[in-house]
Image (cartoon, rainbow, N blue to C red; front, side, top):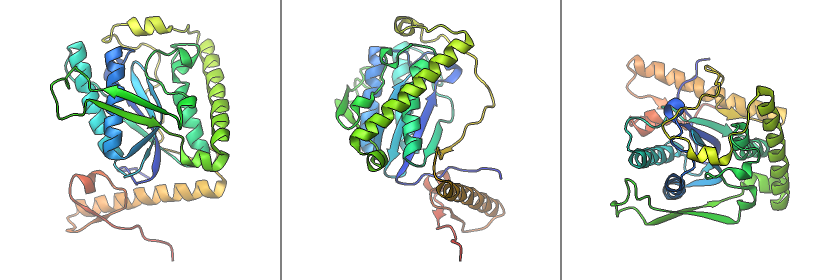
Length: 306
């Protein structure tokens, strides 16, 4: 089956990854860039109904685990990335594109998938070979202890936004605890499960760093590298980039999720073929983004089994 389109529905959980073009160190730990991310995540999460559970801004990319309460994640990413790009270009007096064209958006199904991806995000400074302990990372990174209790605040960036008084002077976001984790484990139990998962990810990452013969870069060097330098670590081109995770779901639930996923993409392809053949009125499957949002097409419910 050839996949087509993206399905964005209110209430979906995601792991989001946005990468710098050419793997330059444009997001390296820097006071101005860090405050810009805090402000822009807070401002646009408020505008678009995005609830944030985990953040890690690395030198060449950033990760988020979020809940999209309104089904408008692409609008959130558009606004954040456009604004971050403008701040970065003003800060370093550079030009051109900042981000790779398409972000990675992995839809998370079930509490265990959310736990797995939060641990992945928070362990990323170790997995990248930057620091041995993720707490040493000097850039923006939330902690498990922040969840459900910490509000991260940022001030409007002077670079690019300094004269834009239409933007609020401050913005913030709450680092929340995902409801499915509280329902599955309780609040304290969720923190315990997350801590165990993070420890496993960190141990695995250290093992992988040793196996590759790397040495940890260290926080000081990571903060002083040129922002225009490019990362040289090996990257597998053409590797799989899944867009949903059913990690450790019960078999029946996993099958249901995959059936819905396949049904959406089959319906999308059918609608696309009808549109290309000249059909005057095409009802796209619910969650279709670009055709409905940008081209004024309508969506209609998927047929159900009799």
